[in-house]
Image (cartoon, rainbow, N blue to C red):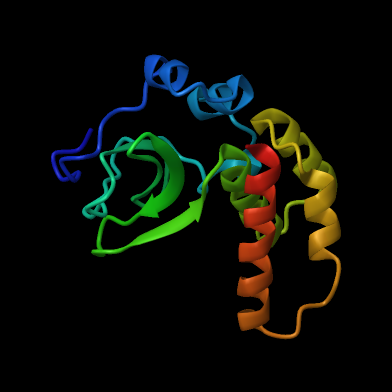
Length: 166
């Protein structure tokens, strides 16, 4: 862990994963150090990254992976799990989802936007345990008229996955 991390940031361990009863495929993905090239940049080791802000209502934040110095975090607040992105240089946090499947949807979308092929997306989804690739591929097919419309539809898509995953 970095000395620059927020005091609520603690190392993510297999014991923590077991206590939180996380999906085994997700846990294996987090600890996998030999990910395919398509995950490069988006899911890097947490060493050398840090988070400078954690919301007051969060009890503890566990970094799962990093991207450009910023951490993707499992957040625990009053026993409830959620996932977000903590920044190394901003007093803000992006909330992503309430389940690991919602978080993985976000990763798959990053891969897609990086021009990963559909075959590579299928392999990536298998590796990380993402169960909603068919729904994701159907979601991205229609043309979306504006970024604002995209953000609203994307948020609803993640919320739907979260509901199906609980």
